[in-house]
Length: 317
Image 1 (cartoon, helix red, strand yellow):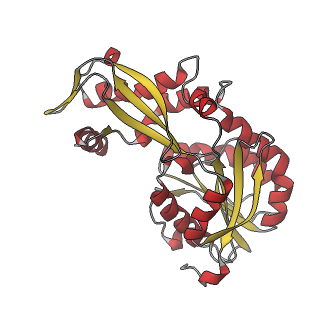
Image 2: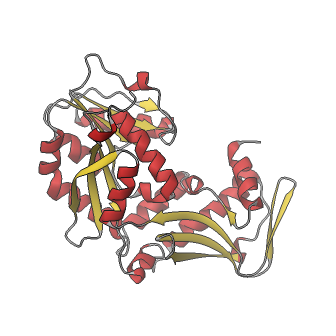
C-alpha cells in the first residue's frame, strides 16, 4: 500500500471526509492549474506578477548583494527569473523540491538563463525540517533569503503556517529574511469566482482527484455523482474546495467502502486569506517581524519581507 492509498483511506474514513490537497497536483492537475491561472477570474497570479514587475527594485535593494536565495519549490518560472535578474551578484540559488523531475527541469532552465550562477538543488520536502548541512555554503553567503512567492502559504492552517514560518526563519538565520506572498481578504463574490471559474476548469481540476483514485488505485466510484463547489468559511477566513455528492453514492478503495449521502462533501483544499495586520501578527508569533510589505495596485495580494525578531535572540542554525 503506497502513501497515496494510505492517505486516501485515512481521509475518507474521517468525519467530515477530506483528501490531502497535495494530490490535486499530478501532471494533469498541474496542467489544469496552469490553465486556471490564465482565467479572467483567478487574480492571484496576475497580482503576484505585477508585484514582481513593479517592486523588485525595492526588494533587491533590501536583499543586497551576494545573497543566497533559497526557494521553497522548483521555481523556473517568470517570478524566479525576475528576482534573480534583479539581484546584485547573487551568491547562490537553491530550489527545494520533492519531485526530482520538476527539480531537474527547473535547474536546467535556470542554468541556461544564468550560466554564471551557482545553482545548488535540494531534493526534499520543504514542509519538513531541512538538514542545515544541506544549505551551508563555503564561504557563507552574506545573507540568506527564503523565497516563497504565490499564495501557497494559504493552504496551511494557521497553526501549520506558524510552524512553517518558524522553520523558514531558522533557515534564513539571524541576518537573513523571508520573502513570502500572501493573498488578502476581499469581497466574497470575487473570492468565489476565483475558485469556480465560468469555464469549468477548476471543476475539472478538483474532479481530477477522483480520476486519480480510479486510475491509480483502482477505486470504484461514479464520477457523475460529484460536483465541484467553492465555499467561503467566514469563521476561518478561507476558501474551501469540496467535491459534493449530488446523490447517495459510494467509493470503494481496496477493501474499504465509503458511503456518502446526498449533499455530503469531500474537502479537498483550503486557501486561507489574511489582512495585512493578521498575517504580520502570525509572523510575529513565529519569531519574524515585517520590515516591508508591498501590495499590488488593486490591494488584492501582498508580499512580505520578514526578518528574525532581534528580541528573540539568535535563531537555531
